[in-house]
Length: 212
Image (cartoon, rainbow, N blue to C red):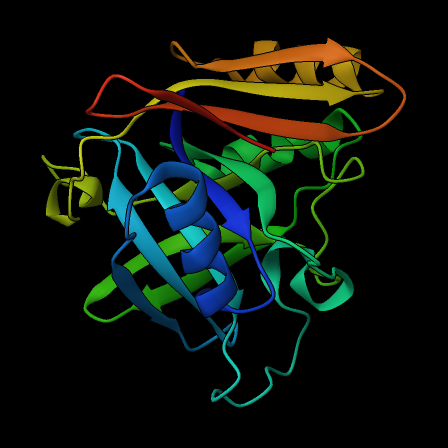
């Protein structure tokens, strides 16, 4: 069973990403940490007990990794921050990746990632790209635990209302998710000529903010 895990905003620098989130939502998203294997760092906030929000960028002070960075960051420029990816949590990452591959979708191979005292497995293609022109979900597997890591993250009262994905690969994604099996998700997939990802957050003051 796959579950919706988190959403990611990509940016040129974390300073740019923090300013974007402050302007769009009025929130100061707290610092997360560094990802040594990928040469990136992030800001994070909880969106509930088992879902979170991430702002991610290349870490300019980290050594350049020997492989391409995840989320296609090496090949992507950000004049302004934008929604970059939706990430699913797998109970059995190896099996789910094989199922996806049998359907013609190469989501990558498992890598062990760390941030501080946290570790998890995350599928990354060698070229670092997000498959299907950026429309495919990224897939990961947390260590077995009674609580999700989001429970340890600062909670500023924001919640995910919806994730809208427009893509010419809508049928492929619908079939992929059906074959993999998913729990309830806020992701709505529709067909369009180009990939476009938007996210709507509900804030504690009652406002709804669309990030695009």
